[in-house]
Image (cartoon, rainbow, N blue to C red):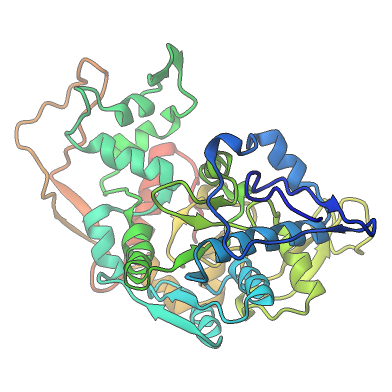
Length: 407
């Protein structure tokens, strides 16, 4: 007999010896959702253990997750395909097991032109589009700055709303939020000045409106469940999601499979090389560098693979994570590689009356210490451009240094 405990332990698959002495794995035609109480403990240490595995073992584990997901939903699945290198690897991996799985590309209008052409060059790819354009989204929800978590915190901290009489977003920006009588690790006082002094909206709803909304509409109409090519080490939010559900989230409201969660950037690039897998030209070439970012041989201690072009290829105008970039920033690179897109992003902009302005509102701190955000006029995109040059300049002025580099 040969069996797997993948149903009860979706990440720790036990290979059982057969009568011939060889290990094997068998699969059900239908895989039930794992029972929550039987799941392994998804800890940071266990994630590190998975991330340290050889690539060939990771590929085998990812294919197990893919088979579980596919069979559980009777083949009613799809690959969320952005045209980026991670989702390109995911699509190749999924179709190596189930060749007929469809892909869905969300054409937001914010991608590099090369990415859009690359994604649409694949067979069996459905294209979905948002109802709003980006300048409308920014005017309504704000510019995407810092990170999704911080932008959301600033957006709701500025609103005159509260839950149970307390605005926890304001507490986080004031470094006063607590959890079990101890200060919360989600406090973000570093960005209080940006929240209170920047004369433009800051928010995180652009991704939900431009990309996720049309994808969700596709899911409702098709009843297909997604494979998504995200990695847990890309952000704290994604790591926390993996720690809750592992790769296959059968038991949450938004069901999705992230079979590459425990992969690293180096795994993705190695897979591309090993399989001679074409990726979008905007990435350039894959090369080896040493710890000083100098060209190196693969066997050099500490050598790693990098791409000579774009590092990430999400929305071209996104400001999330830009303040963390070293060397050439994404907007400096955009200026060099796509000058017309750069001019549209940086140029333009206009002042308009703040629709939420409250005349006579006090400018003194409240009992919590929060100073209301209430400018009479705010900066928004115009027909000539998004006006992000002013946004970056304003942020740099507030902090007295070049946090956002774009020139």
